[in-house]
Image (cartoon, rainbow, N blue to C red; front, side):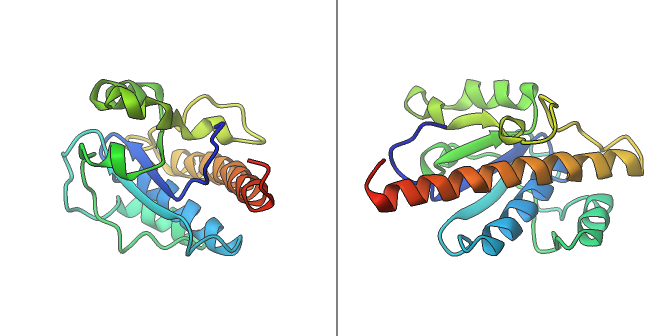
Amino acid sequence: MPRTVPINSVLMVCMGNICRSPTAEGVLRHKLYAAGLGDQITVDSAGTHAWHEGEPPDRRSQQHALERGYDLSDQRSRPVAAADFERFDLILAMDWDNLALLEEQCPSEHRAKLARLSEHAVHHDSPVIPDPYSGGRAGFEQVLDLVEDACDGLVATLLFQRNRHADGTS
């Protein structure tokens, strides 16, 4: 994520925007507030498909997230919009398929904003955040483990960038 200006907005993206991306939105928002960046960085989530538009996150995602202190209840599913590519500084897909769909939609001048959330993981070596939708409890817990790790790495990067920018060494 070599950028010369601070990232002020992050969009998390999965397929239906009811499990992984709302979890990632909630976790990142929580961690940004804990790091003192919550008022400086906008976080949102969306899906590459509009199957669940307007619906809250999957009840299992909400339950597992709440058990770890993340409240997802105010979120509603929405599809990725063309304006998102302009609006957000960083757009993070949960897996290769959703990244490919984003790349197809994304104007060339915004392609550098696209990446996978898992690229920011510090302790886990999973290339993707797997979809827990058809699985059981272990799948939702694994998503939280991977998302928390990647969000920790992302927050560290954002703090480093802000400190470099504040010091004039960007």
